[in-house]
Image: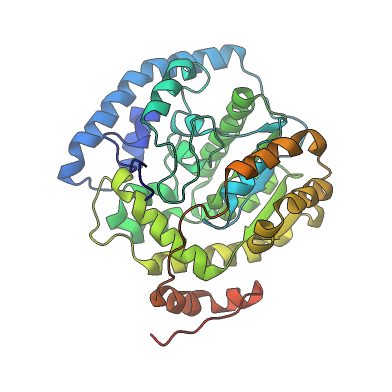
Length: 374
């Protein structure tokens, strides 16, 4: 962690932005460790207080709200975790036409339209200035992925891992594949997701929704049904790097999110397995995306020539407004480096696990298999 950065360790959970009823659904079937009872009870108490404000927002939205999804197709960035999705998303969201979920929206999806004036200032005082695990700048107005927000609106998400790491096997089995949910669960998720997008467009004033959410790899079929002309960007990176990075990332932030403590953290094997399952799912379903609506980007090439890649994205998808957006994107690149964190070694175990679980995928993506003596 860089000197001066505060760790992600808070007295409450991100679930403070949920509703009491939904929180009970999220924790259903899982045991909270005694040491985390105060954290959970404080989270639940704040959520109960916020419920009065939630009700006010629901009433206002019901009276004044109309669908804010525009005729422009949304763009979904669906790369595997730690593959460069954050910086690509942040760059695309520099376009004044972009609509997106902000960090504030991600934490407070039920309050984003009515309570942001005071609550955002308070949250920014508490939030670290940079993400401890990779050094990217943080602010409540910055673009954010959606699954924590979605878990505050409904109870299905593999991100339950961040709360209940002891149960990672059970959560992985139950929460990963979207098609395994019941029809009612899928429709409930769809309705909440569409509402999330509508609020994002109103909150940011955008005309084109841009999403970054690795979990959406497992929802491509549903997303193409909801948005037949949606654009998809799949960004991929060396498997050894992303598995090692995701292992370290998740276990770095567990102390700030967990309601259970798993000694030693979640093992590397889970992340190698997740890599295999995510990339296999993508390769299995990508043909349902219209060829003109899909772009695949190699991270290493994006890192070398980010502006060139942005030009290619705008050209392929026929997106207007690059001339106006480009100065803001270039300014962002000057302030935010790729891989801002100091590099770390990839452990021999990671090489072994990736080769065992996904050696064929490494080859398919054009990377070289690396064998180790251990």
